Image (cartoon, rainbow over all chains, first blue to last red; front, side):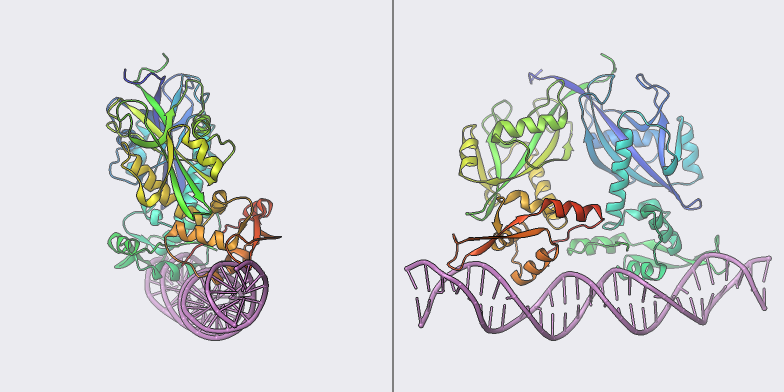
Length: 231
Length: 231
DNA sequence: GCAAAAGTGTTTGTGATACACCCATGC
DNA sequence: GCATGGGTGTATCACAAACACTTTTGC
């Protein structure tokens, strides 16, 4: 024992936003807490940090455990440390957030852990300060969506402009002029149009696009910063 | 013991940026670490979180201990938790940052704790990951200065436009066109011109201004957001 | 009267907004 | 041939950037 001070539990909580392209809505991953206090109630996915585990590694482990996913967007958001936040003991929780693409495979993986995807407008009651965490995440999503290309984390690799538009409308909760949106997005020059069309939602079909990560990083290096600000 | 998991030390580190209006430069508050490992080396101000102390309260305590200040800008930035970051044990450190106005009183208070103010361009070697923390703080400062009125935290209550301009030039490390700067700042309508002049740096004298917090909050409520973006 | 800093206006260009029609296709 | 969603262009306005001179006053 090197330091003469109290020690605490350190936990990770992870906000996982998922977007379902076909349903066109944003969802949040929740699971039924297994330990007391609050066992059985809905909570963000989370867990305790292990002895020799970096915080980020802990977050990656938690995410992998519940979703099977590796290597997706995962970033630290904030740390919650009110002394009274957890009646089970002094737990300081580091909040991470992740953005993933929802598809049927993902939904099954998740179900196997007693977890489920909830519409953001219809969340159940959440344990402790997890609602605050969720609100913080929504703000962050809105803030970042105008400034960075996080939106693309939520869409499949190939997507159409109408899909991207509807995602942004979902994030901001308002409608966006499609002509201006196209102009602005294409002007950034980080999208590549493919020779494929997606005909699942119209007879004419919409061109599929891909996000060009290389071009984005070039731009960012040179001091650019994307601004998808809407209205 | 309610949870069957390892516990850790949780510490606060606090980045304190101070601006000296007369010297016209940004400084960072450092102190000589008192405990092993690294005793005697320069470090951010910090301390361990107490048993029943909220994280924010801990940060307030640390800040007060070293500067005597209370009620100034203080915000959580990020949490550092690499397993190997502190050779003295598993310490997860929550980083806060604060912005204060430097004057002669402040400088004396601080000296009494073996602490000192350092020019940002001439920092000594810092302990552990404290240089990363400092860089994160500088980025945050630049990001926020364009978006929120944090700049005013660094200036005395009454200040002149040339002083404000030089502060921004210091933050961004480049020169700013004074005519455009005045126009932009005054257009936001959050500054009130007083009937006083500061003649300390010119014969003509420069009008003193105050930040109108009320107007700023009104604007923010209505969805505005200040944009002092420069160049 | 001159040096030194404070203060002021105009022009130009770029990018945001608002807005309406044609296109391609499956049925 | 028509209904459905996909795609395109233009005019206007507001704001950012570039840029040079006048004002005040202590010495």
